[in-house]
Length: 148
Image 1 (cartoon, rainbow, N blue to C red):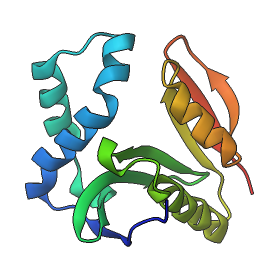
Image 2: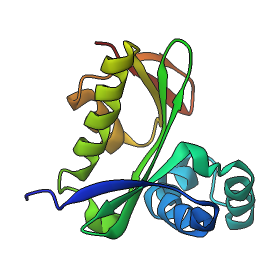
Image 3: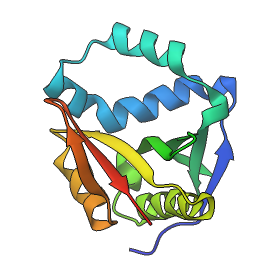
Image 4: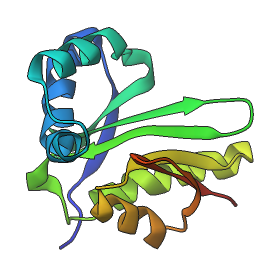
């Protein structure tokens, strides 16, 4: 399927509830399998850690379709979040978002790092297809890196 028109816009504080809804739709199943899902705890943590300066909303034909968060560190870029709503998956949007982060890493001459839950094999396969390699792991997570 051809990707829909994809844009990104900087998040604002009022986007926090939408960002949580995107997080929940993308990650609830995997969080539940790993630790169990506690709605109040997840909501509170999200509200405490949502920094609009680091988040962008992905928009498909003007409709919110996902959330991305990239942090710049001295030695690397950290892809903290790349979430798509279920109805927008398998359209090439995740690939476009990921390629933009890889491009940013190339421009800054920095590797791109991320972590993914062990139980999220779909995400692991997605990142592997795009050149990410496992560099470390813990019981709950795999740590991956894309080097240029």
